[in-house]
Image 1 (cartoon, rainbow, N blue to C red):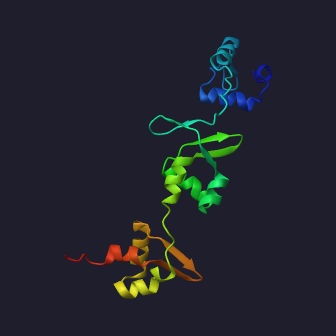
Image 2: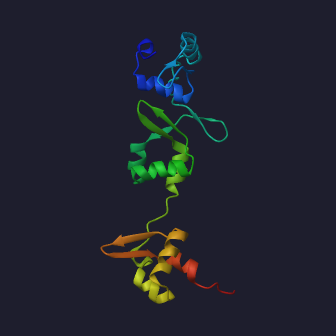
Length: 178
């Protein structure tokens, strides 16, 4: 069969193991494949050409989207990184199409998602790990667990790690009565 299909013997075994083609074992060393089974396998899987990608996509309402940004345009316009574009595209289900090797993103969806980007916190909004541990009487492990399980934003400057004071306050400050 390998000669008939012009493939390696390993490829024939893979077809048999996947169940794509039926083989009959005669002995522990010999297996036979009927010519009719080869023809049936070829008939069952004709080559179908994929349709070309169009520059049209539909939004949630089924309406056609005709305006798109390239990934590079989003990076330049909104000042974000390449990985951030794809992460937000996945998180917010931004419609995208592929055209000539480029990813095109829906303009209205991108404008809505990327203009809502939160402002970067100021330098005084950050608090170091030792300061948090002293203020809230936490151990090193407790603080790491809060950061990990609550998804607190953090930044590393040299050997020191900082987290947002507002986020740790929201978790650890007791509620106030009004």
